[in-house]
Image 1 (cartoon, rainbow, N blue to C red):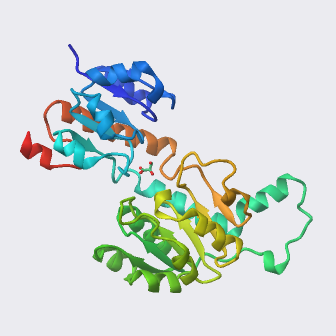
Image 2 (image 1 turned 90 degrees about the vertical axis):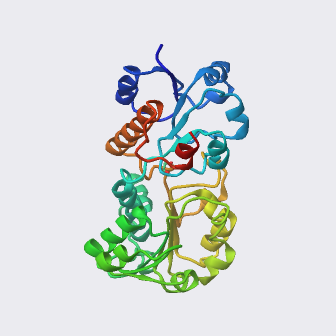
Image 3 (image 1 turned 60 degrees about the horizontal axis):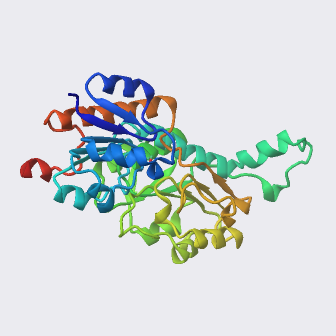
Length: 326
Ligand code: DGY
């Protein structure tokens, strides 16, 4: 009998077909799967789970006694209780690397769109307001030759630095838990303390994972440190930013604008006050969502699950200690 695998949101159809050669795959493509009794039933028998953003809690794990591996189709893994998974000797994997360039492109899209007011002006053109000429105080601002502050210089941060340095002649500051010598040498990035970065940057770009330490790391105090002309970009996780503090900073023009791909709660409520502001550009958490990148993430996640269920080491295993225990 083939081992059972449960696939939920955002696993590419071609990858599901490929998995079916080795596994008995049950798919849940809608977001209501948590309330679906067949989902709970499938959990009882499954050895592997693959998908995006399932909250893997102690309670969920109690319902999945045969589980050997949880394969996230994302690099972020704040949806996983890693400690609990490790305690139960269950492998956890994510998809680093394959999304770096795609996510960096999306972050640049937000930077360009908020600096040059692209979505606002698109709206003007489409609603017949071409002739309402922009007043000088409504012009956008340049991105090139400005100072970009990147908080979180991991591999996505570094892909952003590459674009900024080689394509836009930007001056790059960064803050990270550890120094990134490669970014310093290849893209002329300068390490600095977080507060200095906030005070000196024209663009502040947040790229840190969501952890208890990074929760609301950008809040009222941090917005007050930024320049009134600063543009804030969040391409990481919504919980890293105090959304009400961002709202007030934008509303009171403490900063110029923001480009936001992620929200505290997703999907965000249409009544979220942030959405009523003109000086914010939003996208629905699509940093890594291109046709090519979604496929590559699914493929890597499938490779992880195949290896894991063959008792081999998955290529991007998060909790290596399960191998020692197993
Ligand atoms: C990631 O890979 O973490 C993306 O943000 C999708 O969740």
